[in-house]
Length: 315
Image 1: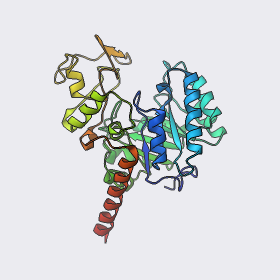
Image 2: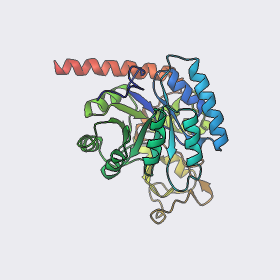
Image 3: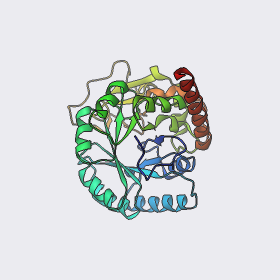
Image 4: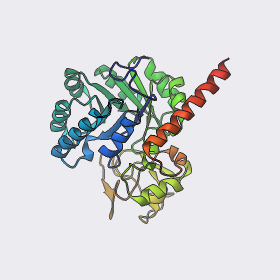
């Protein structure tokens, strides 16, 4: 499908860098946008609404002096536990955030507020039922979070998920789940998505401000080193096996998860995200810690090579 006007002819690659809790920062977002892809960050990565206001001012100012940069996105968590969501939405409207990526709850109120100033709303989902609700709420885009995605990932195959969403939704469709290579971006398009949605691969970059030990663990890990569990937050997600093991837990035999809907925010003496580190099944593609600009250069070369290969096969 044609991209919305706000994104059309603004992207070097059909790629959105996924917002990563605690890991995405203004520094990483700006590097992503300047490299020609949509950079993003969760609103809750700012410690307060006031800090979010400051960060958005910094981002808007930073992109104003980079006229070739791509638009940016901010992730808004709609869960009842997020007591800041109304204030944060006001701040995003103040700064006219181009794309708001909503998660967990109903995006209806966000759609109205963001459309009022001309922005876009993308909603991430892990099931067809949630995709139908998002479409009914009038979102501009749906992020299909498939099996293998880092953090709170889904379980559906991209082949099935994309096809079912396309039966009822003709807006912008983004595909998430273990994408880590330029050919994966093209594969997402061939499946019927408009944009690829890539997170874990950007953890392994110079601009990502996570713990050095986390970066080393990413480089040492592959797809078999990812554990999918709902133990730590009450929602199923993918985490690095080694980060679980170092807490004293056996990642091959984890204890029973909390009751449905009861997130622990941690377990025992350790805390989710601080000690238990998220990553998707595409982690094996991380080799070294390049700058974001270099990584996007490589992704584009891989994408163009895959496109030529696909054209040769078609001919």
